[in-house]
Length: 259
Image (cartoon, rainbow, N blue to C red; front, side):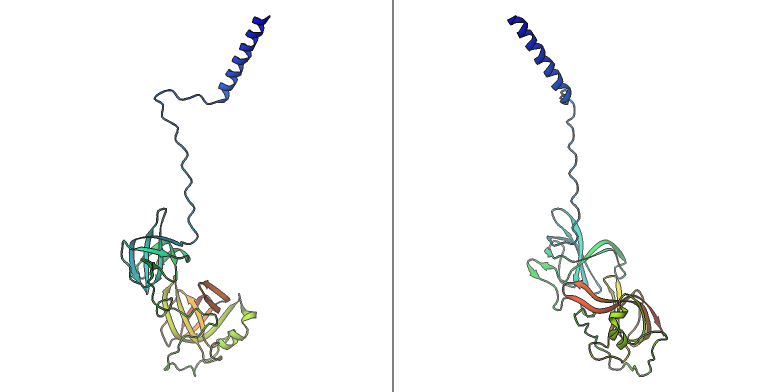
């Protein structure tokens, strides 16, 4: 009986080992290539850089300095108001405004992505010009400060656009007009091209009190100082570009007719 029990125990043990073997992958024979581990998923790109890296390419255009920055994990382009930098410099790039598929007319180059930032630190020292934005950049302040008008621009001959508004009307009725199309005739008192992919125009028509007599317009069209223009576009209020740059109101992506 003792021998029968021993034989039965050995049989059960053998069956158990066979079952385990069927559930466990068999080891590869000598000479087989080891199975490759699945590649680690690529790190998702950051929404906006806030990183330290080395400059691998740089160029200046339209008051900005563009730098290609290489970190341990990625390479990206950033742009800030023009500053002094060289290939090989270590820089610190703060978080900024992402501009996908950005085309620079001055450089005749399209970037997959450029991060526009208020400043870039070179070697631990801030290297951006005072004022935060290049000379000629449209004002970005909480009270929508007007551009400095040219003293020789005469607005006495301006008449209100048919079916449109005056500058004073738009400021007075901004709550009712926000998100709606507006039309206004005025004269160009400031023109800033190719900033964040758009041209920026300041117009005035002689109406409105200081601080509420100047409209900022973004457009793909061009104009010159003193031109009489009719602007048609959507009024946007409380437009915040970040870094303290905010407009109480702005007309975006406007059609501009030079008269």
